[in-house]
Image (tube, rainbow, N blue to C red; front, top):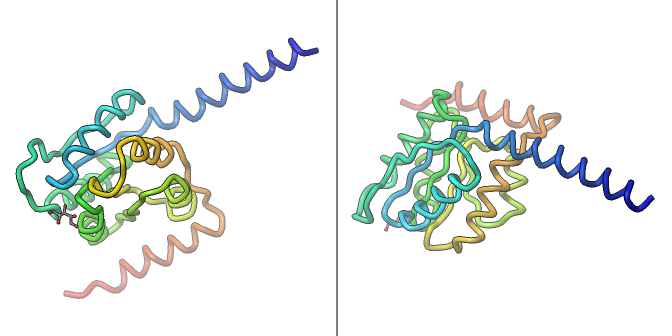
Length: 176
Ligand code: RB5
């Protein structure tokens, strides 16, 4: 009996880890940071390699001072144009780069510094870009946030109508 339970648990673990791991590994991720997020971005790039996630690093490639909106607009556009499935953006606080990313029509960028929000923002908001502050969050927590955010799917149902309201507001309220 004990052996049987162990066997079933082993099968369940193998199937579920393949399912979630497989989902994550099928995603293409665009990642970028300014100088304030440079060190953390390098760590997250290494983490994506460990996870086996396909990614492209859009810079910055040195710790020299740069302007975060440039990186936000590059990654935002790539995600909205469906060249990449998701984006990860990092600046010093995560605030500037998330504000800028959210100006790209179709981007739902979530600034996240905890694992609960990482999960909830995928399930409820279908966030397509994750922003973090390199001067705010520690490396290990940031890696957990990335794994959780990449591995969580949108719940749909009643949340879909709320996303639809945002999308239609965006489409109908352009100010020149
Ligand atoms: C750069 O010094 C810093 O302002 C930037 O990384 C970010 O924190 C802006 O929100």
